[in-house]
Image 1 (cartoon, helix red, strand yellow):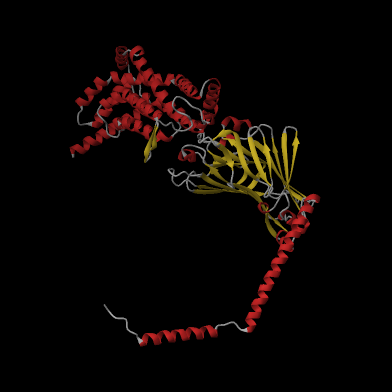
Image 2 (cartoon, rainbow, N blue to C red; image 1 turned 45 degrees about the vertical axis):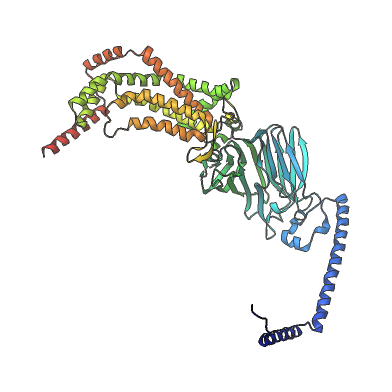
Length: 628
């Protein structure tokens, strides 16, 4: 064990360190002048605190007195606020009613308008609920804003920073809310809201009175409107696909929309309405006098559909207003309600163009056939039954062309033995096989094109229905069998994981539709697949398997009403094919008719002649190459 010994060097070192510390403390001690200055500073702080407390007490007394005599307290007008807001200093101070709100309400809507900014801070659709059962809020917790920016006395002001004075009255069945931004009792900027007793649309006017010497009307006046769309549906990816900013421009003669993904923007002139569409719900700004210039912006906020995202898209519109004769008088409307074709049509302002009904003939079929027919059926039957009856309606409507398609397939089946002989006779010469096969089919009047043409004619109807179901508001939250909402996917099994492109659940209607499609394709293409696959022709066996798989995967997250339609349609088609095959079409009779037709001289049309000439030229070139 080591002994503890006195170390003289260590002792001397500690003594030196201590001496240095004492010298530094002595050198840094405050002088007499510094002590006096510190005492004066403390006294000044205490005096200021006493004055502040006294001022607060006096202000509280004065505020109470002003509340009894006038809505705005003149004592709050400071020189600093006047320098910032000019004559709008009254509206920039915080009067006794600054934090208050006013409620406009009818049987459909409940709107809350704040005194600060004069705009809506809450908008509830009273008759609607979202997928979790909560009320449908289009505006809440600061997700939307509307403010007016203008030049006044060499200052850029915004109504979002100032306080409006409210006045609520009745005009018949209408509630009228006047929100005034005053410089005096005779000079003000006013927002006027007028809400009918039973409507999703309210009028919204912006007017100025007596502000000719305050607002610089020769400078731009900009109305800024923004909104972040809340999620309302079970599948946010499906909802977000139909959530887009749409608008009408060129005085309401043209319509367009921003991109559905990423960020997009546009600038348009003569805009008549703007729709911040959230799939089945819309927030719209409409104007009686077209906006001269509008900047439109959209941003997709859904980055990952597996995350419980609150918002779908962020929208913004910058509207340039055009005052006349040193005053602003802009008559507009606001719409907060369903994206419903029937409601939109009732306003007679082409609002249905805000819905993705398809372009050209597809939109025409939706507007003038599908929506009226389904609207009529849904008045008498539940939504699921109405879909089935709609399917029957279109099957009857298309039955003539479908019958021709089945007859053409039957003729090709009858000709199969003769086509097999052609393939055997010219084995190894595909060009000759095609040439002789086409000649046989044309002579017998059994061209494959006659079977394809009826199917081609059905494509516009199928595509129109494909766009109808995702936009049919009448299907929202309507149940049928195990599906609790025909506007969303049905769930029979929740998966503990998510499969790419398929999802985290199993829907039954797409499975049934896939099985029906597979059976139908087996019946309609089975005979064609037995034939030798010709070069350049689609692989029918591949298509037979691809279509059901596509239906199964792609439609698992789509509206169950669409899968129900396709399932019903294919089941009916299979039934019709079986009836035609077993009870209507007599193959022996068709064979006899073909033989009679073959005996008659067949006149070729221009297309058939051209095809024959091309094939003969190709055959001649091939023979020439073989000789070389």
